[in-house]
Image (cartoon, rainbow, N blue to C red):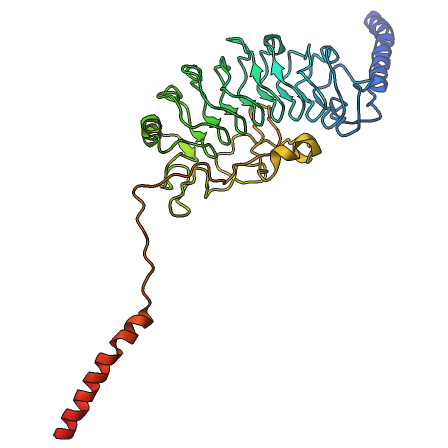
Length: 391
């Protein structure tokens, strides 16, 4: 009897606590309100505020959101406004009006998409504390220089700097990178030793730049390299002293090379001699790398493509213009990389005189040969008839 009384007292004492917990849970659900200009899912932790004409960060965003899409808006400055989102994993701020990467971004981020802005440079503090970052997309900006510190961005696997204004391949690239896209820049050189730390780099995109030659051994330390694109560069194929070491390396490497300079056989880049006395260094017979192309070596494609990669933004049409099948998205441990679309071009990058090209003579017509033989046939037939008459 005493035990029953004690049990009933415990139950009665715990009821207010249970009721209080229930009210707290209900209150939390009431507070989980999605901003009216956005759409939310996943318990309001996945927030899409893209293409809403926003010039300010929306109010009433939950502090525990995991995914935030702010692409295709009019945002100009987000410094310090996102630092309190400690659980944020994916941030898309593509196609806004940002002139620099926002300061104070959450250190928990896995993926940052900031393509299609007006970012001119990156300072060392912009990425100094992003140990968890796996993919960084700054394509289609106005980057001329970046300052990266050794041993920072240690988790970074995919880096997209395509369609910017680099003249030299950035130094101090994070050593764990597996994919680097530097296509569609103004690259003229790769400084000696700047790639030696990239032992895990497997996909390297250098097409559509201004390379004429490269220093000997520049790729020799890339032991994990599987795919390299060199097409659509003005290679100085007539300068044998500077180009032969690159051609020799291409014959020895196990990597697949698309757009090999001064090369005519399809085993290296699928290039071919299109017309007499004209070399093509970017005439591909394989489909372009792209989100819509089923390519076996798709380097940067994931299940998620932000609206920044799907919409044709008017301010970037001059850059894209005819080169539009982009390779963008990388699925890696939940991370992804989506950027502006682009593809390999098939323009003639170098035209030189080919010493070994033989002059192709037009084939003689069969009908002409038959016509020339007609008098002989007539004489033979006449002789046969005369012989028959004499008999």
